[in-house]
Amino acid sequence: MAFPSVYEMTNPLTTVRKQHFWEYFSGVTIISNGVEWQNMTDGQSASGNRLTKSGTNWTADATGTRTFSSSVGAEVEFTVSQNTSDSFCGFDISTNTDSYNMDYALYCGGGGTINIYANGSQVSATGVSYTTADRLGVKMNSSGTVTFLKNGAVFYTSSTTASGTYRVNAVIYTSGVSLTVNMNSRWATINPTGTGTFGMVDDVDGGFSVQSATSGYAKSAIYFDNKRQFKGGGSVCIGSMKNSVAGGGAYGYMGLSTVGYDTGDFAYMGKPDNANNTKFVLATSSGSSPETTANASTTVTQDTSFHTFKMVLSASNVVGTIDGVLASTNSTSIPTETEKLQPTVLNMNNNSGSGNVTSIKYMECYNT
Image 1 (cartoon, one colour):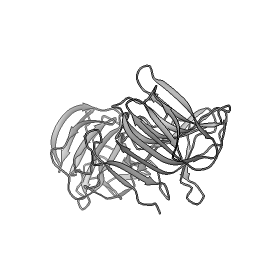
Image 2: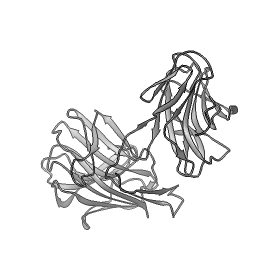
Image 3: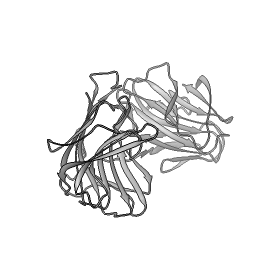
Image 4: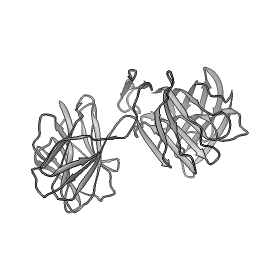
Protein backbone atom coordinates (compact mmCIF):
# COMPACT_ATOMS: atom_id res chain seq x y z
CA MET A 1 0.00 0.00 0.00
CA ALA A 2 1.35 3.41 -0.96
CA PHE A 3 1.85 6.17 1.56
CA PRO A 4 -0.37 9.23 1.05
CA SER A 5 0.85 11.75 -1.48
CA VAL A 6 -0.01 15.37 -2.00
CA TYR A 7 -0.35 17.02 -5.39
CA GLU A 8 -1.83 20.49 -5.17
CA MET A 9 -0.77 22.49 -8.17
CA THR A 10 -2.59 24.62 -10.72
CA ASN A 11 -0.37 27.08 -12.57
CA PRO A 12 2.61 27.71 -10.31
CA LEU A 13 4.09 30.48 -12.43
CA THR A 14 1.08 32.64 -11.59
CA THR A 15 -0.40 30.94 -8.52
CA VAL A 16 1.26 31.18 -5.13
CA ARG A 17 -0.80 28.85 -2.95
CA LYS A 18 -1.11 25.61 -4.90
CA GLN A 19 2.37 24.70 -6.00
CA HIS A 20 3.65 22.05 -3.61
CA PHE A 21 4.06 18.33 -4.20
CA TRP A 22 5.49 15.44 -2.22
CA GLU A 23 5.28 11.68 -2.45
CA TYR A 24 6.62 8.54 -0.80
CA PHE A 25 7.40 5.79 -3.30
CA SER A 26 6.24 2.90 -1.12
CA GLY A 27 4.00 0.43 -2.93
CA VAL A 28 3.53 2.86 -5.80
CA THR A 29 2.83 1.64 -9.34
CA ILE A 30 4.26 3.82 -12.11
CA ILE A 31 3.11 2.99 -15.61
CA SER A 32 1.50 4.58 -18.61
CA ASN A 33 -1.92 3.21 -17.84
CA GLY A 34 -3.73 1.42 -20.64
CA VAL A 35 -7.51 1.67 -20.44
CA GLU A 36 -9.15 -1.57 -19.28
CA TRP A 37 -12.34 -1.95 -21.33
CA GLN A 38 -15.76 -3.28 -20.31
CA ASN A 39 -19.38 -3.30 -21.58
CA MET A 40 -18.26 -3.79 -25.17
CA THR A 41 -21.17 -4.16 -27.58
CA ASP A 42 -21.99 -4.71 -31.27
CA GLY A 43 -18.67 -5.89 -32.63
CA GLN A 44 -16.23 -4.02 -30.41
CA SER A 45 -13.63 -6.14 -28.63
CA ALA A 46 -10.46 -5.42 -26.67
CA SER A 47 -6.94 -6.78 -26.44
CA GLY A 48 -5.23 -4.92 -23.63
CA ASN A 49 -5.79 -1.20 -24.24
CA ARG A 50 -6.52 -1.74 -27.96
CA LEU A 51 -10.19 -1.56 -28.94
CA THR A 52 -11.15 -3.09 -32.32
CA LYS A 53 -14.36 -3.10 -34.35
CA SER A 54 -15.96 -5.90 -36.40
CA GLY A 55 -18.93 -4.74 -38.45
CA THR A 56 -19.95 -1.21 -39.37
CA ASN A 57 -22.59 0.49 -37.22
CA TRP A 58 -23.12 3.29 -34.69
CA THR A 59 -24.64 1.09 -31.99
CA ALA A 60 -21.29 -0.12 -30.66
CA ASP A 61 -20.00 1.05 -27.30
CA ALA A 62 -17.22 0.42 -24.77
CA THR A 63 -16.42 2.01 -21.42
CA GLY A 64 -13.38 2.02 -19.18
CA THR A 65 -13.52 0.28 -15.83
CA ARG A 66 -11.96 3.18 -13.95
CA THR A 67 -14.10 6.06 -12.70
CA PHE A 68 -12.85 9.50 -11.69
CA SER A 69 -14.37 12.61 -10.20
CA SER A 70 -14.43 15.99 -11.89
CA SER A 71 -12.81 17.35 -8.72
CA VAL A 72 -9.75 15.19 -9.48
CA GLY A 73 -9.74 15.04 -13.29
CA ALA A 74 -8.05 12.68 -15.74
CA GLU A 75 -6.50 12.58 -19.18
CA VAL A 76 -7.03 10.06 -21.97
CA GLU A 77 -4.74 9.82 -25.00
CA PHE A 78 -5.25 7.61 -28.04
CA THR A 79 -4.21 6.84 -31.59
CA VAL A 80 -6.47 5.60 -34.37
CA SER A 81 -5.45 2.99 -36.95
CA GLN A 82 -7.09 4.85 -39.89
CA ASN A 83 -7.92 8.47 -40.59
CA THR A 84 -10.45 7.56 -43.29
CA SER A 85 -12.96 6.10 -40.82
CA ASP A 86 -15.21 7.36 -38.02
CA SER A 87 -14.70 6.96 -34.28
CA PHE A 88 -15.29 8.75 -30.97
CA CYS A 89 -13.33 8.78 -27.74
CA GLY A 90 -13.79 10.91 -24.63
CA PHE A 91 -15.43 11.15 -21.21
CA ASP A 92 -18.95 10.23 -20.16
CA ILE A 93 -20.93 10.23 -16.92
CA SER A 94 -20.47 6.69 -15.60
CA THR A 95 -24.18 5.88 -15.58
CA ASN A 96 -24.60 6.80 -19.24
CA THR A 97 -24.05 3.94 -21.72
CA ASP A 98 -25.60 5.57 -24.80
CA SER A 99 -23.28 4.91 -27.72
CA TYR A 100 -21.51 8.09 -28.86
CA ASN A 101 -23.78 10.40 -26.81
CA MET A 102 -20.91 11.00 -24.38
CA ASP A 103 -20.50 14.28 -22.52
CA TYR A 104 -17.10 15.18 -23.99
CA ALA A 105 -16.17 13.45 -27.24
CA LEU A 106 -13.37 13.90 -29.75
CA TYR A 107 -14.73 12.73 -33.11
CA CYS A 108 -12.18 11.40 -35.61
CA GLY A 109 -13.94 11.93 -38.94
CA GLY A 110 -13.56 9.85 -42.07
CA GLY A 111 -12.34 12.94 -43.91
CA GLY A 112 -9.23 13.17 -41.73
CA THR A 113 -10.41 16.08 -39.57
CA ILE A 114 -11.53 16.41 -35.95
CA ASN A 115 -14.90 17.59 -34.64
CA ILE A 116 -16.02 18.03 -31.03
CA TYR A 117 -19.28 16.47 -29.83
CA ALA A 118 -21.31 16.70 -26.62
CA ASN A 119 -24.34 14.53 -25.84
CA GLY A 120 -24.58 13.33 -29.44
CA SER A 121 -24.47 16.79 -31.03
CA GLN A 122 -21.61 18.53 -32.77
CA VAL A 123 -20.41 21.62 -30.92
CA SER A 124 -17.40 22.48 -33.08
CA ALA A 125 -16.07 21.60 -36.53
CA THR A 126 -12.48 22.41 -35.66
CA GLY A 127 -10.93 21.76 -39.06
CA VAL A 128 -7.92 20.25 -37.26
CA SER A 129 -6.47 17.37 -39.27
CA TYR A 130 -5.16 14.11 -37.84
CA THR A 131 -3.15 11.09 -38.99
CA THR A 132 -2.53 7.64 -37.57
CA ALA A 133 0.71 8.96 -36.04
CA ASP A 134 -0.97 11.72 -34.03
CA ARG A 135 -1.63 11.40 -30.30
CA LEU A 136 -5.16 12.67 -29.69
CA GLY A 137 -6.39 13.46 -26.21
CA VAL A 138 -9.15 14.70 -23.94
CA LYS A 139 -8.18 16.18 -20.58
CA MET A 140 -10.24 17.20 -17.56
CA ASN A 141 -8.48 19.18 -14.84
CA SER A 142 -9.45 19.33 -11.17
CA SER A 143 -11.61 22.41 -11.82
CA GLY A 144 -13.73 20.51 -14.36
CA THR A 145 -12.31 22.30 -17.38
CA VAL A 146 -12.17 19.97 -20.40
CA THR A 147 -9.65 20.48 -23.19
CA PHE A 148 -8.94 18.60 -26.41
CA LEU A 149 -5.38 17.94 -27.50
CA LYS A 150 -3.32 16.86 -30.48
CA ASN A 151 0.23 15.70 -29.72
CA GLY A 152 0.00 17.33 -26.30
CA ALA A 153 -1.14 20.75 -27.58
CA VAL A 154 -4.62 22.09 -26.77
CA PHE A 155 -6.70 23.00 -29.83
CA TYR A 156 -10.15 23.32 -28.25
CA THR A 157 -11.59 24.05 -24.78
CA SER A 158 -15.12 23.06 -23.86
CA SER A 159 -17.49 25.87 -22.88
CA THR A 160 -19.15 23.64 -20.26
CA THR A 161 -17.65 22.64 -16.91
CA ALA A 162 -17.63 18.97 -15.95
CA SER A 163 -19.33 17.93 -12.71
CA GLY A 164 -19.78 14.40 -11.46
CA THR A 165 -18.22 10.97 -11.90
CA TYR A 166 -16.91 9.96 -15.33
CA ARG A 167 -15.43 7.09 -17.33
CA VAL A 168 -13.58 6.85 -20.62
CA ASN A 169 -15.98 5.99 -23.44
CA ALA A 170 -15.23 4.97 -27.04
CA VAL A 171 -17.21 4.12 -30.16
CA ILE A 172 -15.81 2.83 -33.46
CA TYR A 173 -18.06 2.96 -36.52
CA THR A 174 -15.95 1.29 -39.22
CA SER A 175 -15.14 -2.42 -39.33
CA GLY A 176 -11.45 -3.24 -38.94
CA VAL A 177 -10.55 0.06 -37.27
CA SER A 178 -8.88 0.13 -33.86
CA LEU A 179 -8.18 2.67 -31.11
CA THR A 180 -5.19 2.32 -28.79
CA VAL A 181 -6.05 4.20 -25.60
CA ASN A 182 -4.09 5.17 -22.47
CA MET A 183 -5.07 6.99 -19.31
CA ASN A 184 -2.26 9.32 -18.35
CA SER A 185 -1.27 9.14 -14.69
CA ARG A 186 0.70 11.58 -12.57
CA TRP A 187 3.91 9.59 -12.96
CA ALA A 188 4.90 7.80 -16.15
CA THR A 189 7.89 5.88 -17.49
CA ILE A 190 9.98 6.89 -20.47
CA ASN A 191 12.62 5.02 -22.50
CA PRO A 192 14.36 7.47 -24.85
CA THR A 193 16.70 4.64 -25.92
CA GLY A 194 16.47 0.97 -25.05
CA THR A 195 13.87 -0.68 -22.84
CA GLY A 196 14.34 -0.17 -19.14
CA THR A 197 13.16 -2.02 -16.05
CA PHE A 198 10.88 -0.34 -13.50
CA GLY A 199 9.49 -1.63 -10.22
CA MET A 200 9.49 -1.67 -6.47
CA VAL A 201 12.76 -2.47 -4.71
CA ASP A 202 12.50 -5.76 -2.82
CA ASP A 203 13.75 -4.23 0.40
CA VAL A 204 12.32 -2.52 3.47
CA ASP A 205 11.46 1.04 2.41
CA GLY A 206 13.49 0.45 -0.74
CA GLY A 207 11.47 2.79 -2.91
CA PHE A 208 10.91 2.57 -6.65
CA SER A 209 13.72 1.51 -9.00
CA VAL A 210 14.78 2.51 -12.50
CA GLN A 211 17.34 0.55 -14.52
CA SER A 212 18.21 1.21 -18.15
CA ALA A 213 18.83 -1.44 -20.80
CA THR A 214 21.99 -3.55 -20.69
CA SER A 215 23.67 -2.36 -23.89
CA GLY A 216 24.14 0.79 -25.93
CA TYR A 217 23.72 4.32 -24.67
CA ALA A 218 20.43 3.41 -23.01
CA LYS A 219 18.25 5.85 -21.06
CA SER A 220 15.24 5.15 -18.84
CA ALA A 221 13.41 7.41 -16.40
CA ILE A 222 10.26 8.13 -14.48
CA TYR A 223 8.91 11.64 -14.92
CA PHE A 224 5.83 13.68 -14.01
CA ASP A 225 3.97 12.83 -17.23
CA ASN A 226 4.83 16.25 -18.72
CA LYS A 227 3.09 18.15 -15.92
CA ARG A 228 5.78 20.81 -15.84
CA GLN A 229 4.83 23.18 -13.05
CA PHE A 230 8.12 24.17 -11.46
CA LYS A 231 10.01 27.31 -12.41
CA GLY A 232 13.56 27.07 -13.69
CA GLY A 233 14.55 30.26 -11.89
CA GLY A 234 12.65 29.78 -8.65
CA SER A 235 12.00 26.29 -7.30
CA VAL A 236 13.27 23.62 -4.92
CA CYS A 237 13.57 19.85 -5.43
CA ILE A 238 14.33 17.42 -2.59
CA GLY A 239 14.64 13.65 -2.88
CA SER A 240 15.90 10.58 -1.09
CA MET A 241 17.75 8.47 -3.66
CA LYS A 242 20.42 5.78 -3.90
CA ASN A 243 22.33 3.92 -6.61
CA SER A 244 23.23 0.25 -6.31
CA VAL A 245 26.72 0.79 -7.76
CA ALA A 246 29.28 3.43 -6.73
CA GLY A 247 31.98 4.78 -9.03
CA GLY A 248 31.98 4.41 -12.83
CA GLY A 249 29.58 2.23 -14.76
CA ALA A 250 26.35 4.12 -15.28
CA TYR A 251 24.48 7.28 -14.37
CA GLY A 252 21.77 7.73 -11.74
CA TYR A 253 20.15 11.13 -11.10
CA MET A 254 17.10 12.81 -9.56
CA GLY A 255 15.85 16.36 -9.98
CA LEU A 256 13.87 18.58 -12.35
CA SER A 257 13.84 18.56 -16.15
CA THR A 258 11.82 19.73 -19.14
CA VAL A 259 11.50 16.40 -21.02
CA GLY A 260 12.31 13.69 -18.48
CA TYR A 261 15.90 12.81 -19.34
CA ASP A 262 19.27 14.39 -20.28
CA THR A 263 18.30 17.03 -22.81
CA GLY A 264 16.66 20.43 -22.62
CA ASP A 265 16.78 22.28 -19.31
CA PHE A 266 17.48 20.28 -16.16
CA ALA A 267 19.00 20.31 -12.70
CA TYR A 268 20.04 16.89 -11.35
CA MET A 269 22.08 15.48 -8.51
CA GLY A 270 23.48 11.97 -8.36
CA LYS A 271 26.00 9.57 -9.79
CA PRO A 272 28.07 10.38 -12.92
CA ASP A 273 29.36 7.83 -15.43
CA ASN A 274 33.04 8.47 -14.84
CA ALA A 275 35.27 5.92 -13.13
CA ASN A 276 37.71 8.71 -12.19
CA ASN A 277 35.04 10.77 -10.45
CA THR A 278 34.41 9.29 -7.02
CA LYS A 279 32.07 12.09 -5.94
CA PHE A 280 28.39 12.75 -6.52
CA VAL A 281 27.75 15.61 -8.93
CA LEU A 282 25.38 18.50 -9.51
CA ALA A 283 24.49 18.45 -13.21
CA THR A 284 22.70 21.37 -14.87
CA SER A 285 21.68 22.29 -18.40
CA SER A 286 20.33 25.25 -20.29
CA GLY A 287 18.23 24.15 -23.24
CA SER A 288 18.95 27.25 -25.29
CA SER A 289 20.41 26.77 -28.75
CA PRO A 290 23.04 25.43 -28.62
CA GLU A 291 22.31 23.46 -25.47
CA THR A 292 24.98 23.78 -22.78
CA THR A 293 25.57 21.54 -19.77
CA ALA A 294 27.76 21.71 -16.68
CA ASN A 295 28.79 19.07 -14.15
CA ALA A 296 30.08 20.22 -10.76
CA SER A 297 31.64 17.65 -8.46
CA THR A 298 30.28 17.72 -4.91
CA THR A 299 32.14 17.16 -1.66
CA VAL A 300 30.43 13.80 -0.99
CA THR A 301 31.96 10.46 -2.01
CA GLN A 302 29.71 8.09 -3.92
CA ASP A 303 28.31 5.09 -2.09
CA THR A 304 25.28 2.80 -2.28
CA SER A 305 23.25 4.33 0.58
CA PHE A 306 20.20 6.56 0.44
CA HIS A 307 21.06 10.27 0.61
CA THR A 308 18.86 13.33 0.75
CA PHE A 309 19.67 15.48 -2.28
CA LYS A 310 18.35 19.04 -2.43
CA MET A 311 18.58 21.58 -5.25
CA VAL A 312 17.57 25.22 -4.94
CA LEU A 313 17.08 26.79 -8.37
CA SER A 314 17.28 30.56 -8.77
CA ALA A 315 17.80 32.94 -11.67
CA SER A 316 21.55 33.12 -10.92
CA ASN A 317 22.56 29.61 -9.82
CA VAL A 318 21.63 26.12 -8.65
CA VAL A 319 22.74 25.25 -5.12
CA GLY A 320 22.99 21.58 -4.17
CA THR A 321 23.12 20.07 -0.71
CA ILE A 322 23.49 16.44 0.37
CA ASP A 323 22.12 15.35 3.74
CA GLY A 324 21.73 19.00 4.72
CA VAL A 325 25.34 20.00 3.94
CA LEU A 326 26.30 22.35 1.09
CA ALA A 327 27.85 20.19 -1.61
CA SER A 328 28.15 22.25 -4.82
CA THR A 329 26.94 25.32 -6.71
CA ASN A 330 26.52 25.82 -10.46
CA SER A 331 26.10 29.34 -11.83
CA THR A 332 26.58 28.58 -15.54
CA SER A 333 24.50 26.40 -17.88
CA ILE A 334 21.55 26.49 -15.49
CA PRO A 335 17.86 26.09 -16.41
CA THR A 336 16.26 29.10 -18.03
CA GLU A 337 14.60 31.32 -15.42
CA THR A 338 11.06 30.99 -16.84
CA GLU A 339 11.35 27.39 -18.07
CA LYS A 340 8.76 24.97 -16.70
CA LEU A 341 10.26 21.78 -15.23
CA GLN A 342 8.95 18.44 -13.94
CA PRO A 343 10.20 15.92 -11.33
CA THR A 344 12.44 13.25 -12.88
CA VAL A 345 14.47 10.19 -11.85
CA LEU A 346 16.93 9.13 -14.57
CA ASN A 347 19.14 6.07 -15.10
CA MET A 348 21.55 5.78 -18.06
CA ASN A 349 24.02 3.15 -19.27
CA ASN A 350 26.87 4.36 -21.46
CA ASN A 351 28.26 0.97 -22.56
CA SER A 352 30.52 0.95 -19.51
CA GLY A 353 28.25 -1.02 -17.24
CA SER A 354 24.64 -2.08 -16.84
CA GLY A 355 24.26 -3.16 -13.25
CA ASN A 356 23.41 0.18 -11.62
CA VAL A 357 19.86 0.57 -10.26
CA THR A 358 18.63 4.03 -9.29
CA SER A 359 16.06 4.00 -6.47
CA ILE A 360 13.89 6.83 -5.17
CA LYS A 361 11.84 6.64 -1.96
CA TYR A 362 10.78 10.26 -1.48
CA MET A 363 10.51 13.41 -3.56
CA GLU A 364 9.30 16.92 -2.79
CA CYS A 365 9.15 19.93 -5.10
CA TYR A 366 7.81 23.45 -4.75
CA ASN A 367 8.12 26.92 -6.26
CA THR A 368 9.75 29.69 -4.25
